[in-house]
Image 1 (cartoon, rainbow, N blue to C red):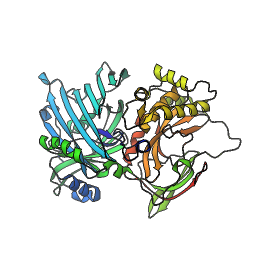
Image 2: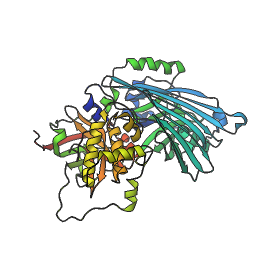
Image 3: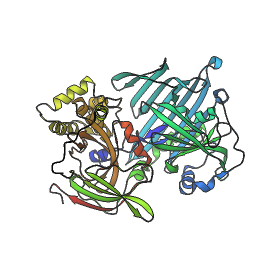
Image 4: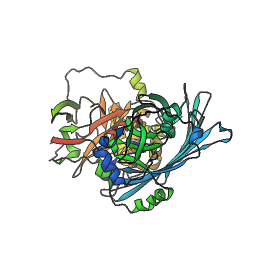
Length: 535
């Protein structure tokens, strides 16, 4: 599955107005699978985002379909995919058997090119998953290159232990994880129901190793229908809904076990089959594209401008979020209440820069479980690395209290890390490069705070950018008697009131569910107040 992100537009716009692009890493999750027939990309999106259901009709039969890897081996499939009406990339999948049929290799690669505010970003992913005849993972090699920066992983499973070697920048890391059941490759998600056998009403659940997040994630799938679309040329196929990391992808898999159609984010992401020549020609075409897809899709415009976003100390806004996707987060500084408008539920957000003071309120404390969770190191937040620890200690030299340490760290990261459209795969890499976007600032701040024993978590949501609107953004929250929001990109503690928090958690993976609402959030009826001598 390919992951693309728009989370850090604010920091890039802040650093280079009109000439910046957020690294394409975190959201827009969609499997790159084959589509049986080719259609112009704009037609596909027009049909499938407006009135998709009427183009699919149930068909009789619902035959039980099951294919093993031997039956699928030797296939080489090229397919393109479109985002919001424009073709943005292609992918290839090939299945090859080893001698004797005791193992198979899934070869896959994907390329993506998107423009934002006049700049282009290129992502290329290659993977080789060696699997047993039952599709369980044996070993893998994975490489992700964003522009000229590469993350490489190599791993395998033996005696109930998953071992992984990671290389990025100047660093090589190793990790071992005990597993109690077979793991499956993320590149084989649509092969799993084919191998198990499809029938309407069938459900599947299994763990997958996801190299993009370097974690084991749960996947669940349901066969919800057997249908066809004569209008789109889609033969009778099983419709399979796949849920992974907060995202839902719909796939149509025919009786031969081939994915003939797929869409994610309600039809905004679509894959389709094409020739190898057509796929490769895309590279030249994309280099000439002038459409700023990510910016146009993710920007949340408002009918009333906020004239003092960095000095706003109060915000009230009506926010439209698709139901049953993200639950609104409550906190002392962010109060959310449901409202009924036009026969649907919207959310009234009231946000204050400073939480209301409650006289004689008892001092807050974290329980042991949460304290451990928000101090623990991870693949992306290496709070136990000697360089992180030493740098953090030097940055807060002469400070006395935890609050002073948080303030000093926020300022240090904001001043030392340049706001540039540069990808980093971890906090340590940010420390080495000394540049990056808001996610980079947040990862490094979080790692340094945890290295000093300050429980810290990641927060994701939207923030207002002057003369533009709301854009997706990441910041942190540190626990000092209570959770204090910290933005090391804008050098704010606490953050201004235009920070609307949608998700939170201990690691970068916790932010991924926010991708399910990008392009689907609306804001209206804004009221705000400027503080700190604002207008």
